[in-house]
Amino acid sequence: MLRRLLSAFSRPALATESPRPAGSVPPGARVYAVGDIHGRLDLLDELLLRMEADNAERGAADTTVIFLGDLIDRGPDSAQVVQRLMELGTGSDRIRFLLGNHEEVFLKSMAGDLKALPFFLRIGGKPTVLSYGITAAEYGASDYAELLELLRARVPQAHLDFLAGFEDLIVIGDYAFVHAGVRPGVPLAEQSPAALRWIRDEFLSHEAPFEKIVVHGHTIADEVEERIGRIGIDTGAYASGRLTAMGFEGAERWILQTNGAVARL
Image 1 (tube, rainbow, N blue to C red):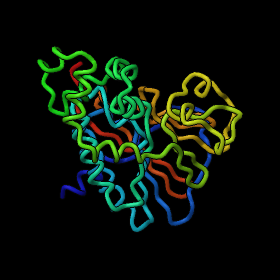
Image 2 (image 1 turned 45 degrees about the vertical axis):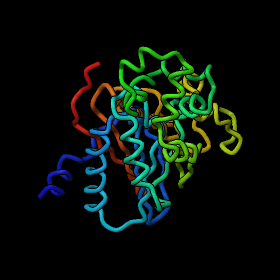
Image 3 (image 1 turned 90 degrees about the horizontal axis):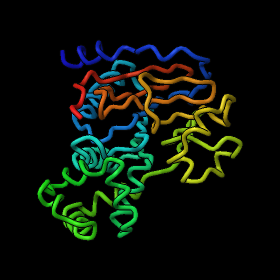
Image 4 (image 1 turned 90 degrees about the vertical axis):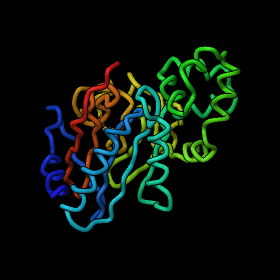
């Protein structure tokens, strides 16, 4: 009964009206791409159930799940999201992860870059700090060096190793999966990690096809954005309560979203 109900709630939603890029994945393959989670464990667990039900309903396939990065920051449960996905991905080459700009800054901070740590906190890192068991009182009483020592004592090395192993770019069929986007005019094989994790305006304003159809997160929109060369699936889950996944099979695409509660910011 639960699977039937989840499947009923997971019918494809309509994407924003725009030129629809045509693409496909190889025969027999099915791919799910998941947008920016940003510390919302409740939404992640809800979406995982919906994807599981949707995948079962569609029948046998060689299924890959790609998380587009920004697992952490802003939402309340970053440590728990990392733990859940680390457990989910252990021993599987069909669950893949892209490194988001938020993971990049977190890893730099944890490596001792005291210039990175203030930036990490400015872009939503405080909830991540608290999710690792550092109290608000400890946070308030610490300077950057002291906070780094607290973090190093509380963040499991396994979490850091897990995040450090994330990929920058995944190509399947006619699609290139990245966190932020690609630099126009540069071949995929020559894209820099900085562009793949941080680019915004130059990529978003590009109105011609890329080498592949680029599926990305990083930039929030109210609904899934399908443009001539890109598909954006970051629907601001940490604040909106809508975590989005897009499924791909053959030439078909569909959308799964949570109906979770809006965060109180």
